[in-house]
Structure formats: C-alpha cells, structure tokens
Length: 288
Figure 1 (cartoon, rainbow, N blue to C red):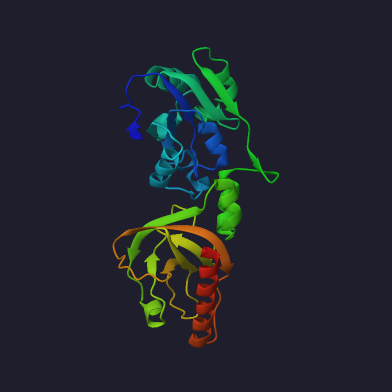
Figure 2: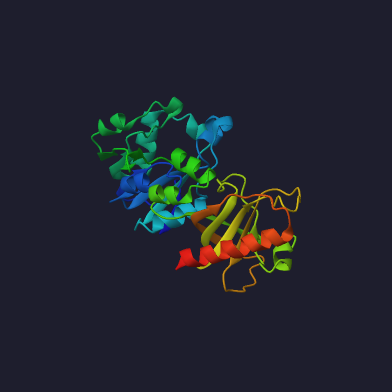
C-alpha cells in the first residue's frame, strides 16, 4: 500500500473512504469496504481543535497503516491536521481536497462523520454533491452495542480486552521498544521484555494478561509492581513462555488476549512467585 501526503497524491480517480479511523474497528472497516484509497488525519483533530478533550488513541499511525493495508486498500493519504486545515470551510474541503486533489468518484463516510470549520460539514452535504457518489454507512452494532473508538478505549482501560477485541475485529495491540528494567523478573525466574507505554496511546488497565508477543505466547503484567514499592511509572512486562530471546532495543508487538487478574501487592516474594507460576500455567493453557 502506498502512503502519501495530500500534496503528493497522484492525479487519478479514486474510491475514497474518509475518517479518523482510530482503532480501525468493525465500524471503520465497513466504511472502508470497497474503497481503494483511505484519507485520514494526523494528529487526531481534537489535539488541534480542543487539546484538553483529545483522547488517548487506540492506534499509532504505524499500526493504523498496517491494519488498513490488511483490508486491501491501495493507498493511504495522510493529511497533516493543523489550525489552517481545521479552519477550512466544508465546501472548500470538498472542492479542493475530495474533488480537486483526489478526484473522488465515490466517497464513503460513517453517518456521524463531521468535517470543516466548526464541524459544519456532514454526510448530507456530501450526498448533495453530484460530482461523486456518496456512501453513508450506518453505525455498526455488536451484541446490541454501538461500535465506537471511545467505547473501545473504555474497555481497554478497564482491562476488558476480550470485549474490546469483539469490537476491533482482532486483539488490542501495543507496541514499543524493549528497554532495560530493574531485572527483578530475571531474579525471580521470569525474565521479561519491558516496554514503557506511549503516553499518547491507550494502555490496558493494571493487571496480568495472557497475550502474544510477536506471535509468541506470553504472560504480561501491566502496572507499577506494588509488591516492591519501586515508585516507578507504569511498565508493560512480557514474559515469553518457553522462549529465551534477546529483545533489547527491538520493537515488540503485544496483542492482549485475556485478563487473568488485577495487579495486587503480595505479602512476600514467595507468594508473588507462586502466583506468577499460576499465571504462567493459565497463560499456557489459554494459548493452546
């Protein structure tokens, strides 16, 4: 898939899907279905319009790109969202971007899509334009609940990663460079690959999870290690089952499958180690 900026987009007709697409969840996938090009924005528009209300995101641009590519899209056009772009009138966006630059013949959006200065543009405005065909996709429901990025964020923050996966269409994933920790896991017999979560992105709630780390089954702790009172910030610690790999300095992808328990303080190191053995046993069973 070709990734380009608006100014570098080649002149050609396009079947275009437009949106922020944070998480590329099942609703987004329905909007993207049948499109050869996706137009998205970076950073999230709220970071420019109302920074105090900007959410932590489900996906970085890197992950968003990969998920969109998996849908068979040929081109991803990334618009730098700044104050100038935010001030563009809706008709100006349609004339200059959708028709002028991208030569859209088909435009697909969700029914709650808004655009232009003060979010004055809506799907009805697009549908009234005869220069392209507009597809307005209704909100998607799963188990009677509307699929939305905000709802999924709440599930992930609460540790409900299985429920989040139903709405995402796949496991919630977190990525980061493996860094050196305090080597306490190694001392306890459970050496871990440690990631400092990105402050701009959603991180699962504190607890122990069964996950896949670059495809390898893992038991993962998210939290602050209360038994040792380190005073350190949140760390994601992945113990790869039955595999010893030197991962320092490498980027690791962790896909969260199920929450095993919440994080808690143990009265002794021995009690913690006993619980860790049980966590690993359960993770191994679930990975099968």
